[in-house]
Structure formats: structure tokens, C-alpha cells
Amino acid sequence: MRLQGKTAIVTGGASGFGAGIATKFVAEGATVMIADLNAEGARAKAEELGCLGVSVDVSDAASVQAMYEAAMQAMGLPDIVVNNAGITHVPQGLEYVTEDDFDRVFAVNCKSVYLTARAFVPGMKERGTGCILNVASTAGVSPRPKLNWYNASKGWMITATKAMAVELAPEGIRVNAINPVAGETPLLASFMGEDTPEMRAKFLSTIPMGRFSTPEDMGNAACYLCSDEASMVTGVCMEVDGGRCI
Image (cartoon, rainbow, N blue to C red; front, side):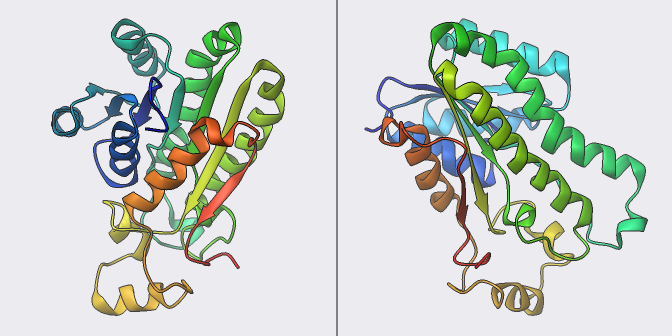
């Protein structure tokens, strides 16, 4: 029960890594709000876990503000905000990615971190405590060909994590990130281009431990970084990648 008495929001929590984080947080005693663009999925996962579920478009300021207000009404200012919602583009040469796809990747992966910070940081400053966790990617550390602008968006998130951490540390707010390698999530096929046994074998050959990241892996890492056990840890971008970035 390492998160006993804590409250948390997990964006993109209806599936994949976000669902793994939400599941772990609930198991460790936290009161959790799952926020996801998939409103039905958020409600279903929330019902399964016995927590709260809301719809949000993390790239839209009004939608993020509505999520903030829903959280304040349901559980007060959260102790933990997990920026997990993310999107990618189809693997292709960098000059072929459409402007709409580029804008969407940066709106969901980058602007969302700004919007949630704008909503929640003022209250955290006033309270003098808070924890923000950004779900970045090994793609931001060791970029892969053909995922060019997705790589760049996750590199942005890593730098944003460190910038936020150094600025907010005196206010009692910790900011960290986790860098998963690809896993069994709805984005896997997009990362690989096609989900075939051959593509999986090729991808797995780049991971020394020989397997994908799992939602449980992300939940365990997130639980530590958001718990009081990590009270001296901020600005860390933890690779949870089976050795992919070595």
C-alpha cells in the first residue's frame, strides 16, 4: 500500500501502459481517476478497477480544464498527475509525414504536458507538494528510423521533464519520466509498421532482454517514482526497456 491516501490522475489510462499504471496505483491504495479520449474505455476500466473515469482530449485546453474541474470535485487536487496519453504516426520517411499528423503528434505528446501543468501546478505550488510523471519513450533517447517526428516529440518530453523538475523542485513538486520500449499496447502495430511474426522478431532482436515492455513493468516503475520512497528523486528519465538503450 505504498500509495495509501494518495490521489492520482492517469491520462490515456483506459488501455496499454496507462491501464497498467492505473491498475498498480489502485492496488497500492491510491484513489485514481482514469482520463482517456476513449470515454467508453475509461468508464469500463474505471468500473473494473473501482475507480473514477472521465473523457478528455489532452491536446485541447478546454477539455483539460474540464478534467481538472472533474478531479477537483471528485477527489480534490490530485497528489499525482501521470501524463501517459500519447500517439504516433505511421513509420515513413520524415518528408512524407503529413502536416496534420505532425501537428497531432506534438499536440498529444507535447502540448498536453503544458496544458496539464498549467491546470495542476498552481495548486501544487500552493499546497507545497505534488508529483508529475511523464511517459516518454526510448525513442527519445535512441531514435529509430522512420519514427522521426515521434522520436522528436518524446525527446521534447524528456527535456521538458528535466526543465520542469529543476524549476519546481523548490516548490516541493517532483517531476520524473519513464522511457518504455515498445510493448503490447494499441500503438505496437504503428511502431512496427505492421504486426507480423517477422517484424516482431526483428524488433525484439534489438532488446537485450528479448521481450517487450509490459503494462505491469510501467506500473511498477511508476509506482516507485510517484511514491514517498522516491522523495529525493526528481528529473530522472528512467529507462524501462530491457537494455534497449545500452
